[in-house]
Length: 339
Image 1 (cartoon, helix red, strand yellow):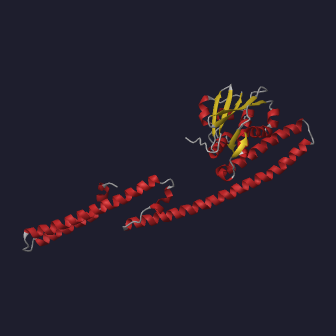
Image 2 (image 1 turned 90 degrees about the horizontal axis):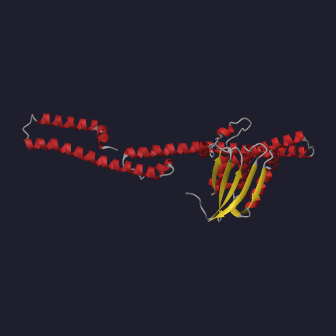
Image 3 (image 1 turned 180 degrees about the vertical axis):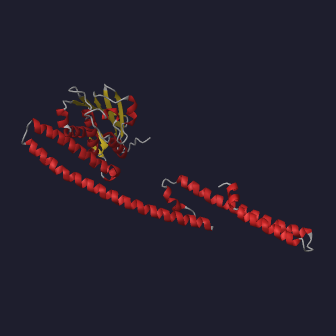
């Protein structure tokens, strides 16, 4: 709040004051009042108006400066009206009342959309659980009618199951803290569960897998971690080299952490795209290759879940050589990888 702007706002009051003083002096000229009295009558109002304006300016400047400081310190800016000090002039009272009303209206609207979002999320979760029944029934029919055709159908059903599971985890990813339990987990069991989920895809795409040195214990949520490793494996399978696909999985203990390596010898990722692989919906050049359609959600969800679970995920890749993904687990429940 600059003094110049303040005076500009008060120009009407200043003009009226000057007019009143000049008019009174003109009237006093017709009387026999001594000069010093006329000067006193002219100067005193000017001093009073000037002092009054200065007091008002510094008073308001202090108030609005304090509001700006509070606004900068607040993480949730809409709570400003709740932390404002009680105003002692009319303009500030009106400002506070206005902020409180707008804040209340905003919260009501946010709650409305929040309920709509929760209803939609519940519907998606219910739909996904319902769709699993016909998928499981179809797999049982295929199991009893083995042939080249049914094997192809089973592979496609596996893709449908993966996409439905991806949708379920995506729907829950914003409230993952309500749906996970961090426990001491066996890394080998987690990895084997992820491989088992992708068994058919590995076989049909002739991708070999090598596992070693994963007899480690980590602190994580097993269900979410199986999902993340599964997403990484699906990427490795999807972009594997024809009939030469190979995936290597192993763990390496380090100071206060255990790093899980998932390496493949696939088509790799262009150097300029590596920094964007965890972005939502990013598929890059590989995702545009004919027959290699991609949603761009797999690695995005992995990064989001790692952030929620207190893990780290890193990726390196060389085009036409392969890709290495690293998931960093804490050795104990107190380690924090946030920087």
